[in-house]
Length: 73
Image 1 (cartoon, rainbow, N blue to C red):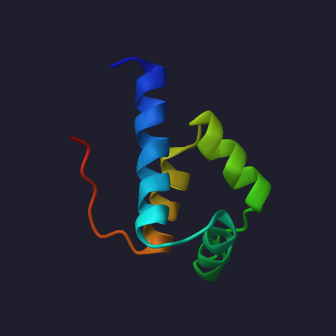
Image 2 (cartoon, helix red, strand yellow):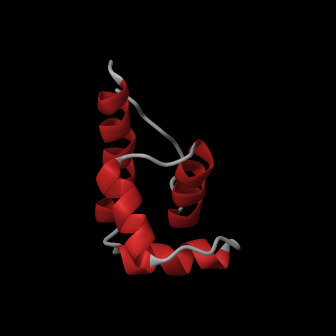
Image 3 (cartoon, one colour):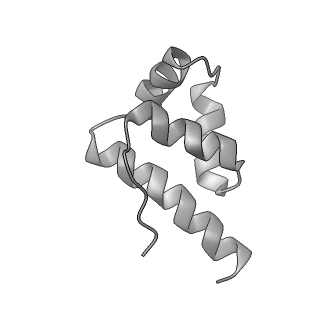
């Protein structure tokens, strides 16, 4: 896989988890705040659109929305 393909995969995973739970980016902002992470909705949209974000941000998003496991295939 190329770097871009990995970026798309991880961004897609976060978006899919949000959609599965019926959550918006605004909901994610609130859920992140509840675990002590300060993010703006526009910043989240940009990160997920570009597919470029840290592993820490990825883990924070999954934790905040209650994802219990990660399936990459």
